[in-house]
Image 1: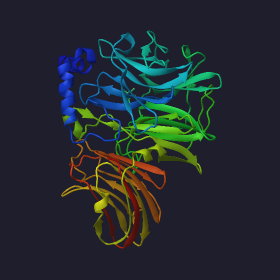
Image 2 (image 1 turned 120 degrees about the vertical axis):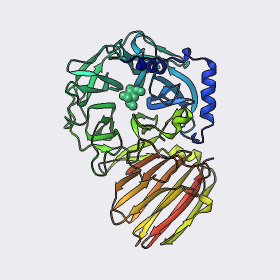
Image 3 (image 1 turned 30 degrees about the vertical axis):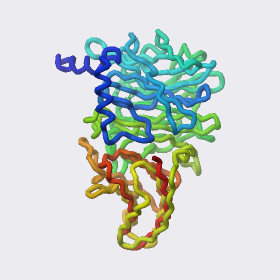
Image 4 (image 1 turned 90 degrees about the vertical axis):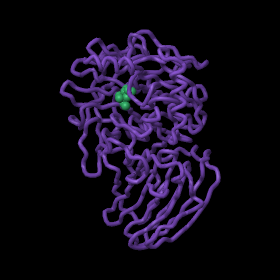
Length: 494
Ligand code: FRU
């Protein structure tokens, strides 16, 4: 390693206890001055947030953690940061969850999951370590959250090393209970540099053994699979994972790395073989990765993702912070399709509402009452001959974000070309979702620097960070080449 790398690394791999209170106060001041702080999304107080971790309902509350690097918008020493909620939409800051820096997590407490059992919440995570030559040695570790809210780490790992045949890219345990056994899926890389998922089993949560690689039909599908999650929904088995390094294909896989799912038959984790359909992206927008699910006490399967991507810089970097989590989505399977809808608890955020019905012909009409930077907008567009019809939002003098249906190409298009400050390492500023419909139902959740669009009652979602000026707050309906009717309700959130 170059000596300059060593300096950068020692800076990035510091602990909170190595920093002066002054440094953190300064950083917090810089972050609080950012015009793009979110109003109702989970975001870091300082530094960088990435994957959601340890999402579970335990002891009367939802617990959620996220990957956190305190000292700036970079990937370095990772903590688990802890937030709690009773309703999935109002979250309380519970401080640091897992602190790294011990022999088995010297270079970060990486991603993992939680399981409520024996009256406590077990937290499974990957202890990231690096040796003198900067070679990676991952350990799978355990911590326990008790009823008093205290988290203690176990001194020894529960899985010491990757099995033979796999590299040190071995991480992100997602644990579940089935019958009287516990199982875990882990993201892994075969020696031939292809990604896969490994399945482990335990009777006591302490001793784990490999039951095998989860056989799928995707034997050469990216160089690493990160953040797997396996769960059953209705009669089906669902595997979420993030394959890295897939080439873009027409309108698919346009982001730097992908986050998606396979839907298939339920697996037998003792002999892990998965009969499944094709790999489908969980989100058709720009900024989405590392999703994790949990079950609510009333039996709903809820997903939260990281609204960001690895290896990508964002305009908030210059303000000392990066990224947020997505809104919670409820997953169901209907007519053999995985559907994603905003959780019903989002309604708790609704304030003033405004309803409007407009037929628009070859023009754009500004809806003054639907202004804002933090709102929900539900709009059905009835295509009545228009070639293109859609919504522009976060509009200002020179800025707008576009969401429209193009009948000729049969694509729903999300265009952030003129949304505001652009992304440096851009993978294009347009995302398209193929759709053949006469009525398009769009359900938008707009926050200070993001939008999540649920399409046709959950058949797809498009997520984007956007970085408009504070006063770019307009909403308009437009059509080209004919007529469309817009039937819309808007709720301000702040
Ligand atoms: C995914 C990921 C995980 C890892 C974590 C580290 O974004 O790379 O595989 O555990 O982030 O922060």
